[in-house]
Image 1 (cartoon, rainbow, N blue to C red):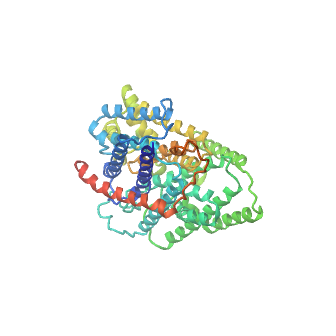
Image 2: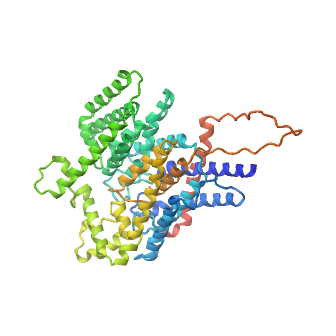
Image 3: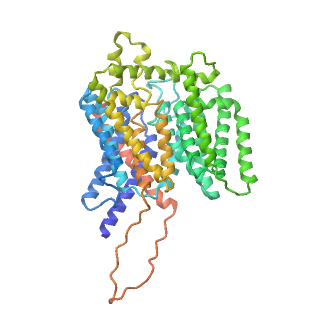
Length: 554
């Protein structure tokens, strides 16, 4: 019994280090930018399989998951199996099975990525502890701050280690981490910012408020500089979901006002810098609010002061009003979209037309990518509509469909810029249905356990990413993190778990009724320094080893 507990605790510490490595260290993994996702996924692939082998070794000598973590009737596990199975079928039936297995020729990591992310999901779900949220969130906040600063440096053409020489998309603001190009960066921010902002929203006391407020400050900078429409869509969706929850009160709104002040401060500063100094890269949709940076900052500050001093510490529920606002926003958006696209005489709404009217030029030619992906799928025979053309085969299938009518713009698309459309084309109706089942099963479990610690921030992070996926691409730099968050969500959805202590035999036939004294919890540094160091070492070793193990792919 005692040995089993010790092995389980060792597996839990290993899972913590693994999560830190993937969520916090891997996004900073130094590698030159490439359009091919295979170059990026080998480091985290090696890391994931090494971790799974380690957990497998612990399981062989007696480490077992806590009771109840897996159940034969659990729909989330069946959905995971369906997702893996449909990926296998589409790979076998692919236009190029070898390319689909390894992810050659596309951003997506291929079926290999499906396999190692599924294995990582299961091991995290089996052994990750329930009390790691606060430290994990802070470490994600540190990574967010570093990524944001690097992004801003490169906007001003400050290249720290000379990686522009052979970059594929030189005009984009890039930096030397694995995230590379702006769409990959926005995918990271789509799930990282909700975690960072939520920690600040619920922080209590001056120390914790400052502790989580610093990453939130840099999060506001990320919103103002990351050039991607998907990030605005993802964060907006997460905010609407938050407003509908019963935890949404005047205190939450007060903290949101502080985050708003952070954003307008940075947006106004970036607007000034873009006007007076050279910058590269595009201008984010949210950055347009930089024209009103000072006004927005003052409004958010006044709202914070009103809620802070006007209510004199009272906390008033706002979730009913939040649900009304969310319904109005979603309803108005759907109505405007329908009118702008299907009513020929609908008047122009100015710059909003660029967002509402879907055409080939929409979202930096995303409309073209959507049209050709949909048309390519419609042109496939029935059996390929069902099983797909193979993971990563979007470009190959599209070129075959276009034939002599292909344009120079079409040739640039190696992804559909919509995860769900890409899933439909590459893994067919079966693959898309399996992924939707997987997502819905997890979100339903989260909705039933919203008030459990950790469920709300991870759910908001996933909602943000899933909304972001409507206008972005699934890439091997981001998808492993998302699968681990799904696994961590299932850990947080469980009732609080306590490790059973082995019973002591009574002495002289008499049991002593003495309360067991709980050991004092170690400090923050002693708790998180060892797994953080282990995460850095794991990523460094596995990143270097991946060049040898997967050298044939480079």
